[in-house]
Every structure is written in C-alpha cells, then in structure tokens.
Image (tube, rainbow, N blue to C red; front, top):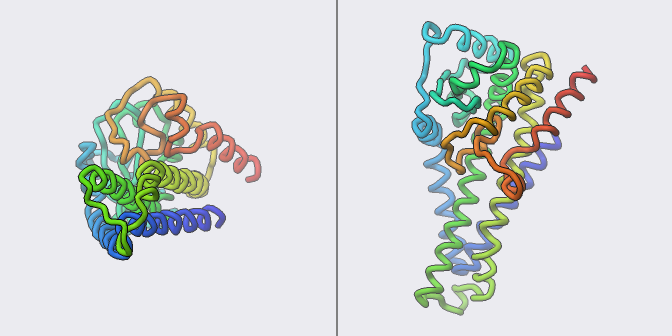
Length: 282
C-alpha cells in the first residue's frame, strides 16, 4: 500500500514538473505544448513499447514444445497469480537476467536470457519468473513506461530551451518565462526528472519482490537467485540500453561508485534482506 502511494506521489511530481518546465520555457503555450507532447509520447509507448523492447534485445517467443520446462513454470505461476498466460520469450544473452513487458495483464510477456537458465536452479528460476509476473499483475510496466516517457519529455524541453537561447529565439513577455528560470531548468530539470523516475523504479522493484515471493510460495527462491544474478551480472557484460535498464530484474549495466547512486534498482543486499525477513515471518 505504501509503495503504491509513494509511486502515485512521484508520478504526480513528474507530471507537475513537466507542466512547470513547459510554462518556464513558453508560458501558457509552453505548458500546452508539454502536455500534448507527453500525451503523444505516452500513446506511442503504451501501444508499441513491448514490441520495441523485445526487438531491441532479439527476444524470440517460444512455444511449450520448444521450452517445456520454462513454459510449464510460467503457466503454473500465472495460474497461481490468477493471470492470463503471458507470452514466453528467450534472449540469446550470456548475462543471466530477465524482464517483463506488456501494457496490461492480458498482453503480458516474460523474457529470460539463455544465461539465466544455465545458472539458476528450478526453484530460483521460479522465484525470478514470479517476480516478473508480479510486475505484470501490478501493471508496473505501464507505470515505469509513463514515468520514463515524462522524464524524457522534460529532458527534451531542457534541450529545446538550450537551443532556443543559443539562437536568440526567446521572448521575455507574458507568453514566455524568465530566462534565468530557463537556465535553471536546463541544468536541474533533467537531473530531477531522472531521480524521480529512479525512485519510482526502485519502489516498484520492492513491490515485485514481495509479490513474487507470495506467488512462488517461498521468498528464499528469489533471494538465492538474486545472489547469483548479482555476481554474474558484474562478471558478464550486456549491451543494454540505459533507457530500458529499469525493466530487468537486476541492473544489466555494470558499474560502481557514482553510477550506483543513479541506479534504477535498489541495492541487492537490501532486497535479499527484505525477502529473508519475509521468510522468517512466514
């Protein structure tokens, strides 16, 4: 419940930021442009984001005859979660990882890498797939897609402000905002939007961990899987697009130091601790 309220508050914050920055850039007309742009971008991502992401990573849909064990696990967990059977896809990637996509439970897809099927036990794979089905059930894919789209729109407005100032196209009248405010927006806007987007992503990961543990029936399945995935993801690189990193169960982008500060995922240690706490309570 708290994660849901936090996500709603963060989404409202992102939307208000977009409208405010549109107003700073172009007054009332800028605010209108920002809302229209966000609506158009959300429309496109709502209908086509799953196809784009699956194609980006070369994920191929498999049938039950092609991957009977994987397909059987997904079908059993989907039944337990009271979800329609999602599409099942496999990515030819050495890094062990997985993600879910789809605009709603009726159009859900779970995708796993060949690497994850090599290193996880059946129980650990169940924990991972249950986590992804929890994302589908909670409609997290839609939430994260909208958040990423609004954050992208804010960054786009910041770039527009930069080029407008370079070519002297700004006006300081009732229809335009303050030049000083525009400069602040150019610097602070994209960073603030990114931080809010990451907060949404981290909140949804905790929720999917909890929901997945309940679907699988044993929080330790996912906890043990996360330990293996963390170590393997650091050793095995993956050519992942930063814009889609939030979809994966563990961050596919390796890095430490300040990069961890801007991670779309909560610390693995904290996720494992929460899952083990659930196991003790259960």
